[in-house]
Length: 388
Ligand code: SF4
Image 1 (cartoon, rainbow, N blue to C red):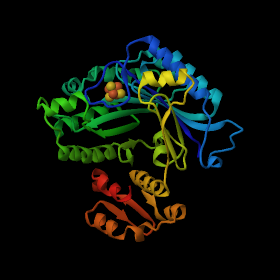
Image 2: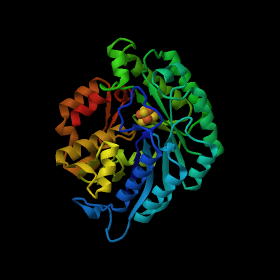
Image 3: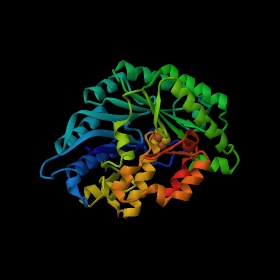
């Protein structure tokens, strides 16, 4: 169980109308340079503290890690030399596995072939590509700042530069989007043949421009039932094209599961660096960084801790999180293992709830395993609410 590292890059070319992530419109190279220095500083000063340090390894030596994930924001806006400096800081502080998975999130129209070649030469071997939709009308509505041709061109560049592990992000349930539109989207995605697809159902966050447009009836309220139908169509289409759904929102060709994201679902340790980054010690401690970029930089520059929330989880929270995260995976929850870890016999403890979920067709319960049915994946919150 080697930990992973998450690096948050909070800059975007413009702000999408549905976005509530910790991200800023890229205004000055000076801010980016200060941010990269702050990140390097935070990484260099990292010291691991946990209630059970031996779970990871003897801290006299460097910690081994085997995944690095640049998320955002739009990490592909960083220059290759900035990525190089961040990676150097990681390599100085941690022992990075020679086969480490190194992912960088990229948005269409933010990279040249030269930059991608440089990323590849630094060891970046996986691209998580923010396609979202191939429908230009929807891209405009979402204020994505690119069109579908940009997505196709950038995908070509990724392949030209040698990326053999590319993941697409797609969003279902957009305003005005019909089932036929969605099927077209999936066909477009399949024709480009990525190795991995992450599917999100559009969520409307209170303080976003899109929420305001819906409140003022300039855009229709997305139809949740239709979004659920799109999700089910996606199961079939991707299975037909050789993808396995290994997690509720994630589909991979054999051998291309995201190793980094799997750490979250397997409750393995991940150390986050940068603004709003979250960390988990793999046992019972979760902590997160300052959410505003300016304040984050100031904290680092003045030698203060970047952590603004630090929680020691109760046993109930740990066992609840574990059940919830394992159930997201296609393998489901191993009941004897769960009993061994937490002393909880789930079938006895939740007898009535499990019988109800079973009668609704949301779960499959065997002697040793609990997992979601396809219907359960669509209505997963109904199942998760029992455990968390
Ligand atoms: S590219 Fe992603 S992070 Fe940036 S504004 Fe759009 S949704 Fe938010």
